[in-house]
Image (cartoon, rainbow, N blue to C red; front, side, top):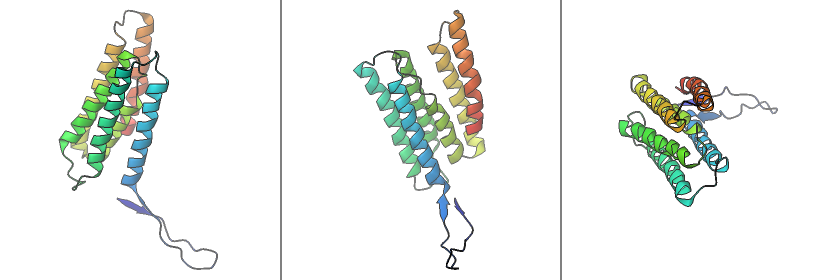
Length: 173
């Protein structure tokens, strides 16, 4: 999928070459930037000093997500990406989010970029159930992280996350 801008005349009166943008490469760049930003957010904003196993687990989850994403972008048939890659992205995301229980800052960017990637590689018929599954699993993990909801603070944190993340998922879909 490419977009071409209209030819423009340069000061000498010649038509300049057409410039094309590959939307898939822009999506790849956005996914990489978001992955790195979320990773740094998780590490640098950790709410307690990270133990080495937690750091390694969080890093492994991000690397697994990156490996699956790389497999998707190097797929020989980009219009027919296997469903296992989408499910793999969701599982890697859930595993990475679960490390927030051990002190890593919740990487809320990862489920959002996962939904964006899923929405861009699959048809709406395939991507909608996967995106809804990603949203439901993210909300379930948030609920487990804030459990018990008996304290007013935990309820407020969960509701704020629920209300703020829901539109982000819809936007990325």
